[in-house]
Image 1: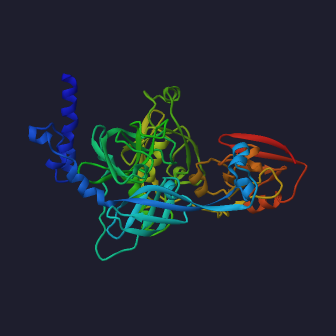
Image 2 (image 1 turned 120 degrees about the vertical axis):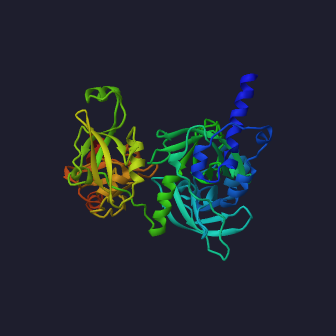
Length: 475
C-alpha cells in the first residue's frame, strides 16, 4: 500500500510540469514532484482546452463494388439460411464509410491524418469539435510514412491548430495525452506516459520509428493527436498492439518531426522528397560486430553500395558500419531510414562511420533519388502467370521507395491482385522480374508485350531479396 501511494504521487507529479513551465525548454528542465496538496489537485483540463479544438474527425467515403443476390429468390431468408449469399447477379455499388481522426496544424486549415484513414476514399469530410463540417481536399497521401495531408476551406477567422514539439526531446516516462474519436463515440481524451522511444518492429509503415505510449488508443483514434503537457503535438496516433481490437496499453504514434517533414512537403508539392543513400544496409548482430572489432552490435552495416550514388561519392564501402546520422545515433536500418529521411534533400549531412575499427566522418550530399527511367506503371492482363500484377520500371527512386536491391534496370512488382494468376503462382510485391522465357526484361512495356499472348510453358527468373528464383509454369 505504501509503494502504491508513492507511485500515485510520482505519476501525478508530472501532470503539473506544464503549470511551472511556460515553454518547451522549461518543460524539459523542470520535472519535479508536487510540493503541496494543492498541486496534487491540479488537472489536465487547461491543456485539453488548449489542444482539443484542433483535433477533428475525418470521414472517408469509398464506393465499393460487390456481387450479391439479384432476385427475390436469392433474397429469401430461407434460401440464404441454407445457401448463404451467392456470387450470382450483377455487381452492386455500396458506399463504405470509415472514421478516423486528424489534427489541424495550420491556422489556414491544413490537417494531418493517417494515410490508411483516407486510403481509396472518393470523398473526405472533416468535422471540427464545434460541429462545423467541411469537404476536404487531399493534397498529399504518403503510404511509406502512413501520413496524409488535407486542406479544408480557409475562412476569415483562423482555425485552432497545434504547434509541433521537437519529438527528439521527449523522454520515457513523460506524461502525454491522446485525443481522438475512438469507436465513433465522440472526441475523447486519454492519458498515459511515453512507454518507449524509437520502436522499429511495428510493421505499420516503411519508416519504422514510433513513440510507444500506454495512453489508451482504439479504432477511430488513428490520425489523432498525441500531445505533451504544454499542449504541443509530439506525434500522430497510428496503431495499437492488440489481440482483441481494443487497447491493451501498447499504442504507437508517428513522431512529430516526421509529421513536420511530410507537412512541409505538402506545401510545395504532392510528393514527399526523401534523400537518396544509394546503398543497401543490414542490421548488425553480435557475431558480425565481433568480426568487425566492435564491442557491441550497434549501428548498421553497409552491405552493398550502388555505383555513382551518394554513398559511393561519399566514400562508403561494403563492410562500413554507420553509427550516427547528423549526430543522432542509429541502431538498425529502420532507425537509419528515419533519421536520414529527416535530413531533407538540400545540402549535406555527415555520417559517423566505423571502418576497420576506426571511426571517421563521411560527408554525404542530400539529393532525391532520380526516377530514370520513368516508372510507367502497368497492370498486366492476358493469359500469363503474371496477370494481376502491377509493375513498375526500376529506377533509383522506385528502388528506394519499395526498398529493393536489384540490377540497374528491370521491372519490379508493386502489388498483386487477390485471386489473380500472379497471386496463385506465389508472386509477391517487391519481386524483380529478370527474365521471361529466357528473354531479359528491361521495361514494363516490353513485359506487357511478352505476356500478351499465351504460351504452353512459362519460364520466369525472379529476384526476391538476395535470392534468384527460377519458376516454371504450365500454360
